[in-house]
Image (tube, rainbow, N blue to C red):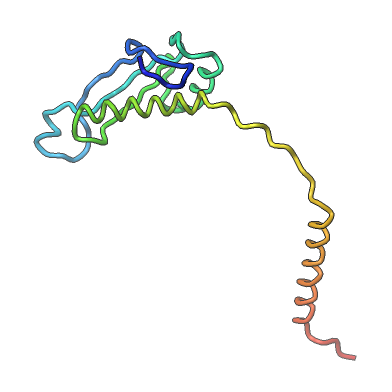
Length: 140
């Protein structure tokens, strides 16, 4: 079991890991060792996710979410398979934790105070006076 929050835990059988060769420059090691990891997690069929978290998770996943409702996370930052596996799992856990966090409270609209309005108008008058001094004097 992978503990996400005190109320959410994922079973190891819900996550499938696939190992593949990492792309990019390397050398002999990169062409023969399958160190990259592709993690698959089926969001829509997971029995351990509450419905609200599932909806937020699908929105947060963005392009990592497939049409079938699976999240695909590819990890190939590290040289070893084990570190890439832990990196992919940590990224999935972080994504689910972000989805499980309660949404922020709605913004409450406020109006500017009378004092702030007066200070703004006073500043505009001062600025206007400075700009008027830049004009050529009126000729009679």
